[in-house]
Length: 373
Image (cartoon, one colour):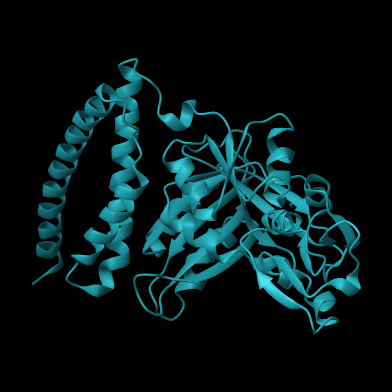
């Protein structure tokens, strides 16, 4: 069979796909009107995750599961955009994420994420504390919060793996960032001292970032807790001199704890970069781009994929690899690079990346934090 015949067959398939795509958008418009009449949000994160898993599981060729997932995520994103367009044209209410005030963060007052939220939005900004990182993403995707603030990477312990996985799973967009200096303290109940301590509570990263200090006390039991500030609150509630928490001086003030030892982190210049997520993209004033690409597991694919950035003279700021959840021994690459809002090089580079990758998703175009170059 010659190439022209094969291309003709591709054309026939594309014609069918185009017709199906237009039909899907027609149904999306009907769904938009139904949701508007019944007060339902455009985004249903739980249903999206279930549908993506179900669609990917039906692919006969397992090697195509990741591509199928990306394909259906794109279709869902396009359908949601069409729903928002229809609701906006009809003068209906905005999507909940656009009208709900406040930003979600993981933890309780005194958490480092709350400090990042205040640094980005201001002291008087409304805040929604939640228990898990995933709860932050779900609140934004479901319209319960306009924004979310989550840690993305630390200068000592590197990437926050769970957040990277959630960026891949949820249809949220990075719209900003804040960099917070991390000054860990050992906190205890009033009147306690270091000699009293037997158990230390903190987030696993907090414990890891203070490993040398904790190693000097081998008799202490290290107990991972889901947040530094929650650890401080727990110690305050227990009122036991044998319990301590690794958390911030701010958390000590909030929960009435004493600072038993300060600046206990291994690295004196310890910072965490927090990202701000939203349900809709916002590239105004942007100078940074974050993308997620998926590559075939063959020789030279990463080198080939990164070529357009080098050829365009664009500065790549960070690259992080994570295993693909749906295919063994394949990887996703989270990449940050410099790119101003009006930079004419960005669009052609993204187009070329699409050609050289199995999938490309722009996670966000946003303004980098001061000092986060």
